[in-house]
Image (cartoon, rainbow, N blue to C red):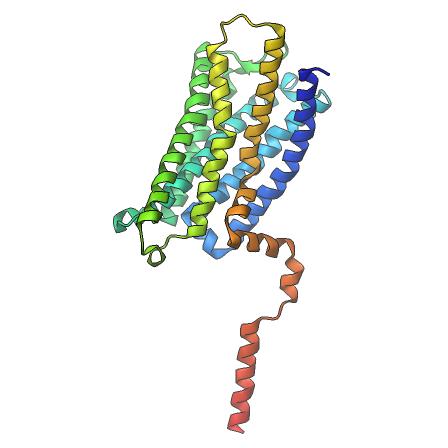
Length: 318
């Protein structure tokens, strides 16, 4: 059994698993962050909401088509020029928007945990809405060259970039915007936010939320585990691109690239489960949404107490 065959099987069955957990997890994130008022009005969780929507679209657009191409051999990027241009356009813009939201959420935790009131005021939900809108426009414009330079080769029948200058920029983009810069920003501001918590005694008097802080730090950990290894492997492939390699080495490197590519999908599918581990409030909200019938059958204690008080007051008057 060759490594190439094992890689195909891992891509197919591992991809199906990631699709299921990704759609459920990101769907649950969207439901919880959009329906609970305290989450909906918090800048950090608003960034998580937008990231979850992007993650959901990323899984549906990218991972499903990859599984179909691996399992059934149906690769629309080889036959449809529209899909050849549209798929990488969405992958580029969704990836950068997702990483941007993760960075913004980490920065917001630094703002809200600061002992300086001016810095804490930088955490503002209205500004969060405007920032997300601005970056959405920026990353859409950033991906427009894909519609110009991506074509299906008449020789190899594969979809790819046809412009040498844009190919060089793509390398810079993958290393910088999609790997190094967001990872550094998340680690840096995550560390500053954690230090603020350790140094601030009156954290409860501020608007900071320890559980939300843990959720953000776990998101940083997810980035380090899932995204950074892919960047390291990409750098290795660039450095050794001019080296003569044996067939066995090429097969091994291809297998490692397959594993690390699957690992990157963990970043787009695993946030819900990181939140579930790090926050008891998020766990309770998840259970309430899954077991919604129990919530409908519960009696509201406040309503009962109020009714009893009314009855007692009526008896007193009589």
